[in-house]
Amino acid sequence: MNHYFTNQELKSNIKEFTALINEKKYTFLTDNGVFSKKGLDFGTRTLLETLKIDEIKGNVLDFGCGYGPIGIYIKTNTNSCVDMVDINKRSIHLAKENAKINKADVNIFESNIYSNVTKKYDYIITNPPIRVGKKILYQILFEAKEHLNKNGELWLVVSKDQGAKSLLKDLEKEYTVKVENKNKGFYIISAINN
Image (cartoon, rainbow, N blue to C red; front, side, top):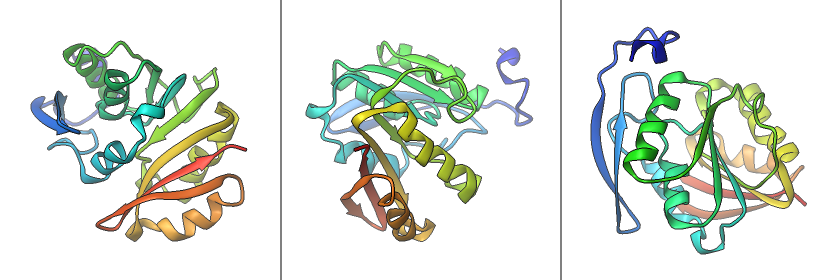
């Protein structure tokens, strides 16, 4: 399996956990070098539990999919066509394994931001990688417009401590923005591409 991880220095140590999301059980494999390897993080859980899952249809992109909880949750609860992207080879490998485990028929591929993303989406859903810094974060969130259909929606989670309020103001310059939920300092934001 090492050929998957040629760009990763961290020794692989795959672990399995189960998560209950909206009363449905999921099993995920995680590993060193991927986000939230100990279990489903609070921000992602809040995002998934806030999504209006009955309204989601069409093409969906899980951006920065990590080991796959967002895309897998959406695919197993909707008839959407789900693409999942990440720059981390280890994340891609785990997401593919987790899609099989959870019987989610999704399309998973590597992409540096949107470099390999060729189609348009009705939804782009992300727990964005805040640690990459403001420049790349804003590239992710504002270039999303080019990959959203008209009235397509970008959904994201961001912590108050990580600049949610200033991010909201900036998003309002390009999107119709709504705070869908606030939970323990996490903001769930929807941004519509008008």
